[in-house]
Image (cartoon, rainbow, N blue to C red):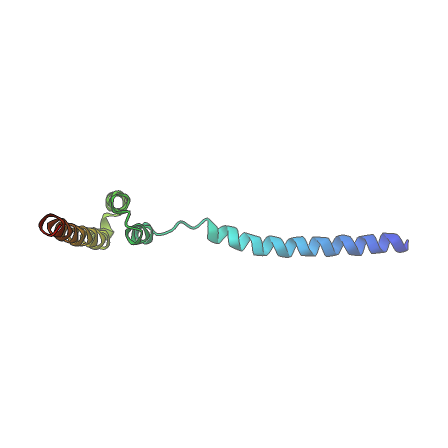
Length: 101
């Protein structure tokens, strides 16, 4: 009878631990299932200099979220500005290489 009582206590302890793990685990699964904001993903792509991917993402975002056009447009303008700066620096570098061997 003593063994049966200990087994029951052990079973209840295991059940309690599993329930607690389940509660904490569900919170993580629920939060993990939440999709990232596409604009945050675009910001990440821009920071990684993946401009073409960011443009594609922002274009799709505008199609599905026309009410947030201004937010996407600001990011597209930032990409254009960054590309213009890159092209200006590349042009200066080519000029130096050609004129000053």
